[in-house]
Image (cartoon, rainbow, N blue to C red; front, top):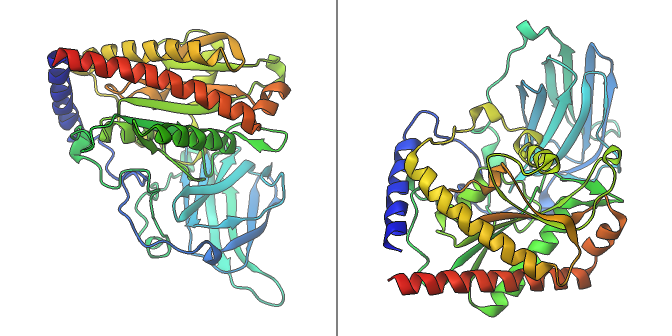
Length: 432
């Protein structure tokens, strides 16, 4: 135990040095790092009632109908080419299927990207520039409108505008209230804080996706909603025992950047991080069913694991963040040693979890896999990603929307967490 404590101290020092480097990301707007601000009643949020595209492959216009005017900020990004429009929180009441592409736009998506702030992301067919953007007030029986006009340009002429991570012109209208479940003040330079004062182990539950990122979708069901319901049920089950302090990375329909999810666990000196997802396979790849448990590895255990990791690791791109600005990994022998030990604990929990879940829910034919998931890369917090089923499989989807199935699955997961943490605490006590 003493050697592990020393490793944590040295790891904190290594991360402190890394955070002081120019690559450290200090500007990210995240629920884990934003200070509390006064909230705004949901009834006051602007309502978007319709959205449409017009034009062709040379010039394309986007129009969003609103019940009131809003401030906004438009940004262009490359590799892949995108346009990102940030607005205060909007209640999107758009028709099902809204988001199909036309002209310069392959497709667009929209949703909450932070508490108090929404985002519209356009995937472009190639480089383009914003030639005009404005908001029209309601007049002559027509609603208020946000209009964005795009024009095709050569790659050499494309200019990427800075990502609007600090947007003072929008800040007064955005109620940036973080979820109460996420720590509002980060530790300086990612150092590990002391354990919570009540001494209980911290379990962090991470419902995948959220906000602008719907995840996979099938038969009218979105992954982000299914896994949030599952995560909340698991939280309630664990809290009922009183053994743990349970923290959610999100407890509502908010987007949390990938790097900020494991950061929540690190800031709280968590004993375990569990990310919840629900996969889907493209029709061309056939059918699959059952729950799968993933751990971190440098090389994927199979092609399906690699496909899933690649898809999940694109969440920030889906939400429009500029991945080129992500901090680089810290190459340090101390971190490597600590992460090896952490992976051992992660694999141990994965096996325990499989043993419990297989008695109550259907498991994938290969239930234990590994790949390079970004959310599992906290170097000193045992972490797993659980795909609780395939929304692309009719039988799995029926289970995923069933409260009875969810209760059984949550029960087996809670039992695995009990067993795992009881053994770790006993080992830690014997070492002291």
